[in-house]
Image 1 (cartoon, rainbow, N blue to C red):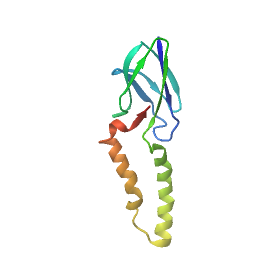
Image 2 (image 1 turned 90 degrees about the vertical axis):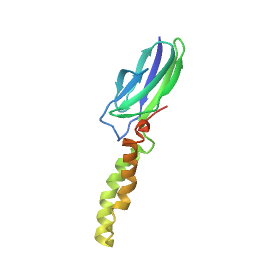
Image 3 (image 1 turned 45 degrees about the vertical axis):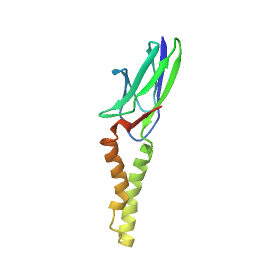
Image 4 (image 1 turned 180 degrees about the horizontal axis):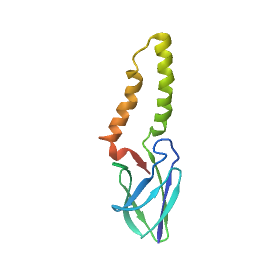
Length: 132
């Protein structure tokens, strides 16, 4: 048998949730935050997809030979780890700007974050996860 190893990165975004691994359209297991898991699969050509709720990764096609091990890295979208720190920075920044400089345009600080999340939850839902 051949081995498929999935290494999930440790991240803030989706840190408390498991990501499901689909092999040829069938769920074979789940991966926790920061976990590495091995799956014994038959040799040949396979399509791997990771999913969390309705969001997915793109399909990754692999070919495994007998007794071969392939390793794939799994994580959130490209800037996923920056969303939580950015969100926590906006609150005190808004307080300081509004109190001392009467800057009442919080929308300019929140809009990029909101637009990015709307994209990944709708049109880009098949790019929410990265599987390489």
